[in-house]
Image (cartoon, rainbow, N blue to C red):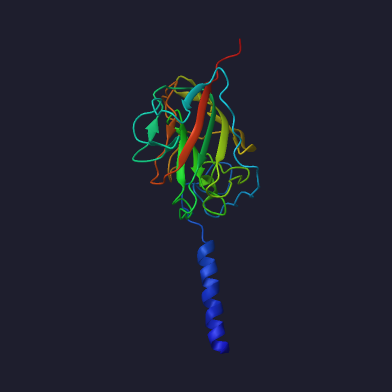
Length: 253
């Protein structure tokens, strides 16, 4: 009997360890200024905080409404319109308009009951200028490499905290983005992001190392567009979106 209990204990411990394993790439390229690599599973997990859920903000009078539940006309073909929601399907979609510096509001949700495991099951992304990703991921009680969690500057910088609500509940992102400033082929000011997730600050004027890459250290190209589309990623998961609007940020009068 004792021997049987010992076997059960060992088996149970192995299961716990296996469940605690975090997918990532420990041998990836090193990130500047820290001891971690791109997609490093050993990087500390952002602390979880509970929030009141999505912060729903109506479009200001000067906003460009990208999705209000009635039409996908602002986007390239790919996603589905159903029950007033924009649902990820088939392929990435881009806004038909191009933008530079912006304020963006977007609400998203992963339907309840869908199995998730790290990067799989509840994954999408928002690409500013089609180049700089803000990760969308169902990160509630779902460990993964920290620079791939919800609200991360994907492959570059984890969020300050994990503010993700439980699966099946709506989430909100409010962000501002500034494109890089070049002088000739030299970057004199990097692209910057500030991000609030469900009203909680996750990125506070942080700099991108360059356009988003997977398993590669990002860097800026010698030439860069002045504007680009907002892209929503299809990652084989039916992430739902609603209430998307944008305000181009020009210079002060």
